[in-house]
Length: 89
Image (tube, rainbow, N blue to C red; front, side):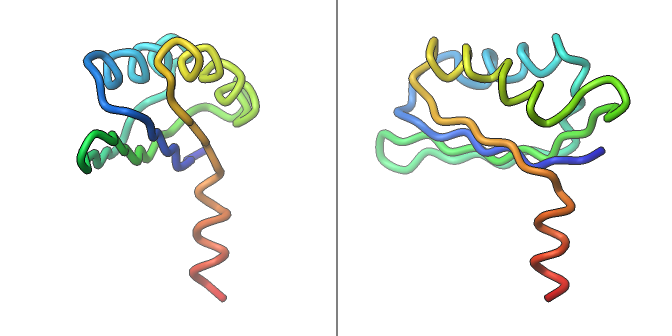
């Protein structure tokens, strides 16, 4: 399954490391990533893939909750199917 994850928050050292480490621990693969810093704000969009027989989007969001708290971020993940459906309308 594929999903889109967004990460936003005040820029500081270690954001990419914290997010990618948490994803790797869940065996979630990062297929593509785009990130930018606007003034003091960090934003990142990730296209990720994972085995939906072993893991759900809710599982990933739950794991990312600790990263959010530790890093002071807002992290959201949604199924890629949602974005595809919206574009098909």
